[in-house]
Length: 418
Image (cartoon, rainbow, N blue to C red; front, side, top):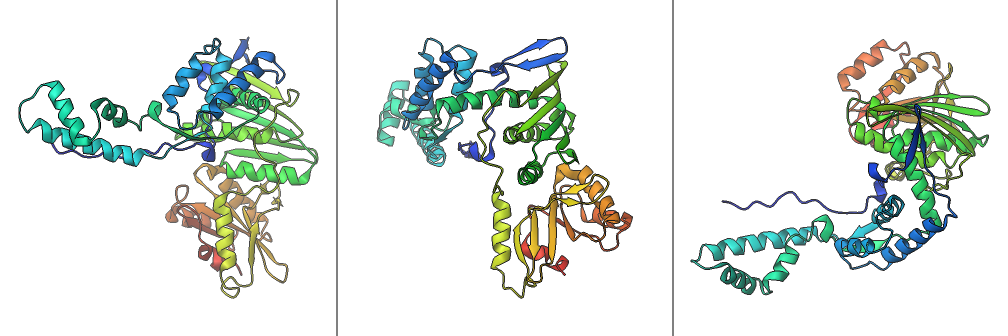
């Protein structure tokens, strides 16, 4: 039999993609009638602070340890079986980075298998002789070979770094995760934001777009009313969408006043979740000011590094406008371009989850023809054939729209900057 290495899987920190989540068994809530109420932990709670302080301290000194060793140590705590203790520990485990040694472990494993096959076919021997021969061939004793053989399994991962957190902040994170775990199981969600700061509102809408969520937005002088589709309303990749929706929640905590009504499906029951800002939970996300995803930063950098003549005198920048297209239709551009004469052209991107918003935008631009807005559409949402059909159905002959695969290149939009 020919030995073929498996596809290697790298264990890395998940914080960059923000998928830190409690398991279903770690969610604490009560159900009364047809409503569900998450159970919060007070930041000043003595037990919660004791647990959080102990766990943060333990994880802080775990560098160089196997995760299995750390887990066994934590289990020795007399309260380790409590749901609160387990939930806090899960959140801290997700803050660990592990030694990226999977490639070396994988290669070592196949070296051992190849040597074992060679020894096994060299002649008859008992188990002890085989183990001694293999140890001699590999230069270490057989028990050490066994311990190294599957060092890329989760329990054998070695902790390289741990991102420390204040124990009180960990409790806030726990409370946020309780709500996020329920939102992950939502079918619909209605959100009302009361925050008069126009910059925060604009940034909030931008983040809503960056998270690629399905949303209908109504804006008045004092309120933002946002209706969101939940993951259980999706027919495709609902888990991916659900992670984005639940991980968007900490952005809501940054707003002054807010309320949420969501339809949750849990254990085959449909329940209503109603929560608001009266329960103060500190967000672990950064301020709404100045946020822009790395792929947008890279696009802006590459565009502005082009010769001035090639980019027709335009400079790219983060979109900071909210364009009123009429009929309660708003565009929050991802990127804006401005030339020395002050002319501004905007770019808004649409991905797989934005089919409804794209149709609304095309229809709105049929009326608001004076808006300098370019629409970039992901190929996973609209093929070139469908794009031609969309443009032919538009009543705006000057509609500027193009498709892209992963992310647009600066050259892709040059034809539309005129």
